[in-house]
Amino acid sequence: SIPMLQAARKRNSLNLLGLTEADLEEQFVRGDGPGGQATNKTNNCVVLKHIPSGIVVKCHQTRSVEKNRKIAREILQEKVDLFYKGEESDVYKEKKASEKKKQEKKRRAKENLERKKLFKEMQELDKK
Image (cartoon, rainbow, N blue to C red; front, side, top):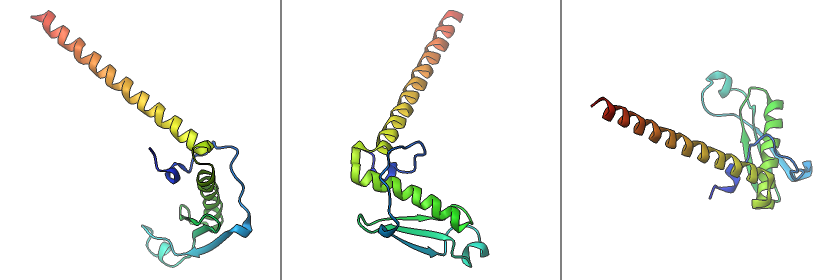
């Protein structure tokens, strides 16, 4: 139910498909968002395209071009892995597991809230 390419950017993923530099097209552009002159005058935003799949990643998380290049490659590698492996991808499985854990936590919190309400109602009845 989750969009496949939005599951990317998980750190603990193993067994990802490798990327070859020949398959990548890299550009350096001006970033967007807050930052004023520092953003408007420097081309430190990295746009990375995987030519065979057509997947494009844009990274402007730091001021450093080298760090942005590294981060963009990590994100692209995970997205390419998702693109080719689909639901068999470690990234997808990890995202599903964390989603399941989140839902379980939400369910437990709801149950605890119900128990607290019942407890308060019982105390109110005991006082009367």
